[in-house]
Image (cartoon, rainbow, N blue to C red; front, side):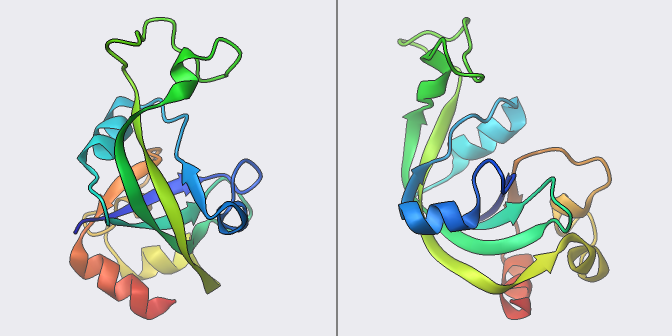
Length: 149
C-alpha cells in the first residue's frame, strides 16, 4: 500500500462533502505530474485530504482509493472548465481515481504544524512554491502524521 496527499479547496469540495457523498471521483486534475501520481495509485492506497487556499490550510482527513485507471470524464465535457479539446476518447490524456471517505480528523493538522515537524524532502506539501494537488507520502511521514491527529 502507498500513501498520498491530495489537495482540494474546501469551497469547491471539502472533506464534509466527501463524508456526505461517501464516494467521489477525483476529477479536474490538469497537471501532468499530478496526473502521473494518480496513475500510480493502487486499490487500497490511503490519501490525506488537505484543504488548500483557505485561511488555515492543512490535513483534515483520510480517504481510500477504491478504483483506479479511470478516464476523467470532465476532459470530454465541452461545458466543463476542465475540458481538453486535444484529449480523445480512444486516448484520454487525463486519468483519475475514485475515493471513499475514511475519516475526518477531530482537528486540522495545519500547514504550519507540518512545516514545524517535517522537511520538504519528507513531506512535499511544505516545500515553498509547491502547487501540486496530488503528491506521494512516505510511510514514515504518514505514520507520524497519523499520530498527530
